Length: 111
Length: 248
Image 1 (cartoon, rainbow over the protein chains, first blue to last red):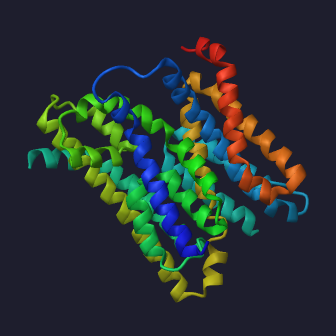
Image 2: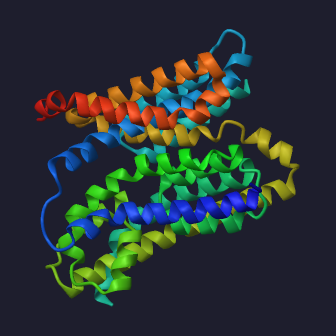
Image 3: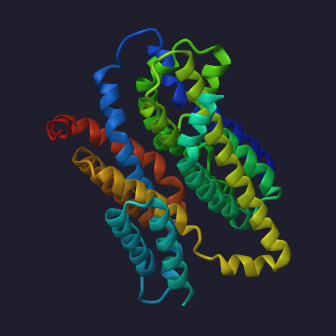
C-alpha cells in the first residue's frame, strides 16, 4: 500500500470508527433504557487499563534506541517519565508536566 | 448571540489547551512524520479524529505504516470512554435535528463533555444551541492548532536543513509518552482506577517482553497491542468481582 493510500484509509477509517464509538449510546439507548451492567463495567475499567498499556507501548518504542546506548538502558526515558508523573501529581497542570518532561528528555538524550 | 457569547467565554480555557497541544502534535507530524503535504493531512486528520492522543499516535502510524488492525484496536481502546460520555449526554442532545446531533456526537471530547455537563442552562433549545456552539468552537481550536503546527514544522524545515531540524527536535516525540503519563496519573487519583491500570501495564509489559524474546523489539512493539488488549479484557473479566468489590 502506498503512503497516500495508507493516509486516506487511516484518516477515513479512524474518522468513521471514532464517530461510531461516540455514537454507540445514542444508537443503542437513544429511546430509553440503561446499558447492561457488564458493558458499563468494562467501559469503566478499560480506560485506565488501556492508557497504562499505551504508556508501555510508548516505552517499548524506546527499547530499540536504548539498546544502542551503553550502560544507561532506558535511563533518560525513565527519568523524564518520573519527572512528568511527579509534576502532574504535584501541580495538576498537564501542559506544564508535558513541556517540562519533554524538554528534560530532549536535554538528556542530547548530552 | 447571548448563548454564543456564553459558550465562547466558557471555551477559552479549551482554546489555551487545544491550540498548544494541537500545535505540538502538528509540528511533530511535519518534522517526524515523513509524509508529503503534512499540512493537508494534519488538517484532515485533526478535523476527523478530534482527539489528542490519536493525533500524536497518527505520527507514529504514518512513520511506521502500522498495520490497520492495530490502528483500529488503538482507536477502540483510546476512545472507548467516549461511549460512556454519550450515556450522560443522551438527555441533553435529545430533540436536536439529525445533522446537529451527528455533529454533536462527532465532537465529543473530554473537555467539551465536561463543559457541556457543567452548563446550568435548563434543558431545551438554548442548551442544545450552547452545546453546538461549544462543539464547533473546540473543534475549530483543535484543527487550527494542529494545522498551524504543521505549517511551523514545514517552515522550519525550509529555513534550516531538514536533518538539522530533526536533530534539534530529537526527543520531542516524548510529548506523546508524557501525555499518556499525565492522563494515567490523573486517572489513578481515583482509587477504583488503580487496579485496572496496574493490570493494563503488567499485561502489556508481559506481552511485549514475550514477543520481543521471539521476534525482537521492533516487531514486538508493532504487534503487541492486539494480544495485550485481549489479555487485558480477559483479566478484567476474571477479576470483575474483586475490582467491583474495591469500589469506593
